Amino acid sequence: MEAMDERFQISPLIRGTLIGVYLALVLPLPLIAPAGLRPLLLLATPIGLALVWALLSEEVLLNDQRIQVGYPRWCAWLLRRGWQLPWQEISRLIPMGTSQGGTVYYVSSARQEHYLLPQRLDRFNDFLARFQAASGVDTSQVQRLTPPWTYQLLAVLATLMLTSELVVFGAMRVGWLTLPAGPPG
Image 1 (cartoon, helix red, strand yellow):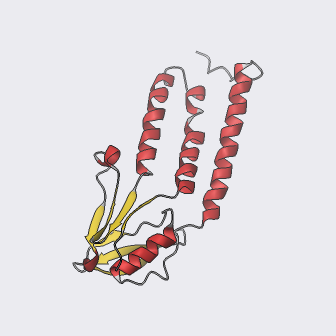
Image 2: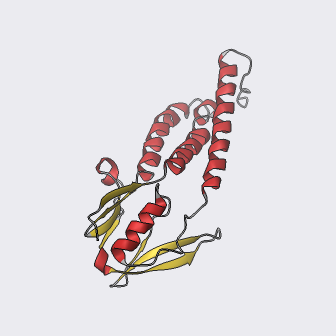
Image 3: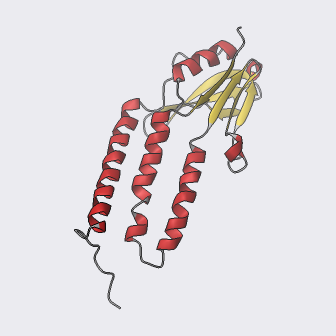
């Protein structure tokens, strides 16, 4: 087997789309919240963005000895999840159906431990080829968890939401639009 030392990260399409959805859903909240909650929401928004960014920073490292799934140093202290297995301990992949009709795969070790195989990676086919070559486990049936068009559609919807929010915010800034007054009292 040729020497390998490769890093795979979550697909930029998936990462960008999910960050866009977060922003589209959260950015308007300080504008529509009661005045007393606005400072809290203004503080919580970037903290939430940092947490979403950290969750979407999962990476897979492959080398001659093992597969390792985890997070980069900047957020690993917070997200203490991850796993690693030497190639010789990997015995098979176990498919499991999801409630949405997809299939996830668990990497099974010789000690009957099961670890979720990442399926939202950039260069996924390259990852599968390297995984199969190093572990000897057939990956020909493994596919992405969701097809790219679903994230492309979600990205378009998030962009439309953000654009409409910017238009509304701009209209509010120039006085063309105002929010209704709060309840009397």
